[in-house]
Image 1 (tube, rainbow, N blue to C red):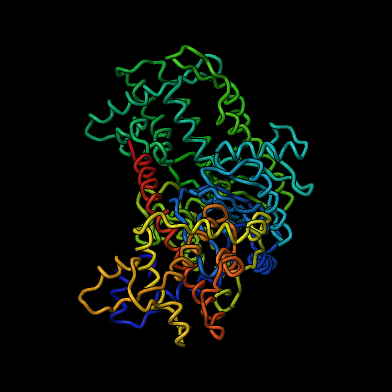
Image 2: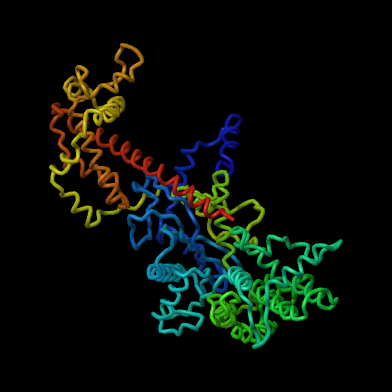
Length: 635
């Protein structure tokens, strides 16, 4: 309820006893779902998978990236800064992440689903690293009892290259639709809705030749719509004019539903009707109608849902689940020859192209689903719903995440983690959003991880990296040099901050401590603090010059660490150890309380300066994120 509408939740708190925001974050902290492969999570999944029937353990592995806003947030529970590129076991680096790579599995037979891992990347993950991650996850899933028999992803260049590298490593030819992990075949499929969009986009740009001499042109689809829209009743009532001019509307171009409506059986039927009615449309448009009909049937064959689809207005044979005697195999044999004959003619340049990425991917899917059916038959499958072979569950997960936080369509890395954990706890329940880019999937979550809410799991302790160890051994003189003040004005703000820290210090318990920290009289570095007073009474705290200099050294040390090693885990703990070892605190003359006072000063300073540094960076990120959003929404 809080994630759906924070304002509504705060209003209801006036009438009901509801948990606070802090309570929610304490619950989420107990769920061990950090970047990469989490052993605790896989141990729990193993217990659930062992209860499944052998046939229900067969699953597919989906992975895709979702856009995030660039942001850095310090997490006290894990003692690390979230927002850097994080590849789990492959390490973190200084790059600011703006995408999340999410892995999810779904049962081929019963449809259960489960998010299992995520990673933060900048722009897109490198193919060689993606290859290693895929192998690691598949191996972990096999150890947990799941049987991964296929992968599903879109046509991103990093995905295609990673799959190619996996084939090369398995000594498998590139045209074969599988690779091997631990000597077991894994069929690689591409998301059919994305392939349909690519086919529509190609038809927008090129004249597509097929069967040697036949050709399809997008202009005939526009003519059919223009003629149909002037009639009393429209046969193309689901089509809108912008659907046929998606090059002008970037957001519409991304919609799968618009591509499906454009290359639909209704469009093919409308074209055939116009030609038979001898309306003002060339007879050669019949070739475009046949091409559109084939595209519609091809997509239907990869989107079957149930055993009996007799009442469906689409092709009932191709919308039925795949069986041993279904007509899908004959249709795919025919379509394989047609797809191989596709040629793309650019009328502007007057050139032919015989190869396009989506063309090879359609052929890969046809070969892959044949191999996949053989695997399913060996596991006593009587039918296979081909809609289970796309990545709609993953797209729906992204939709659920964006719905949290009052419609947070572009969350930060920290918000993404929180929303992902919340969505899993809520069993991925989401309201039906208008204009979604995928079909609703009926699969149920395998495990909502609520068992972790009653446990008190602790975050993993990380060690220093080699570079940090070298940095810890810096000489004290380097800190002193960094603390040099530019002028008198440079002293004023940090002196005021020291006064704020004095109010927070609880270790000032004796006169010697006070004399070291609090100035007995105002000096030249107190000018700004004096002007902040409301009257002649000195109510604010005035720090000694030694305390101000010490805080300046601490500030320079922390900023230097964050600029060069901000991605390292346990950042606050490491900083405290380094400051204790290098910063001079001999100006504290109280031998009894020096240790307590030093520890409290360091703890307060580290928290304050880390938050200040990240706040300053956030101001820069806001401009960058706003520009990214404006560019993505531009028509």
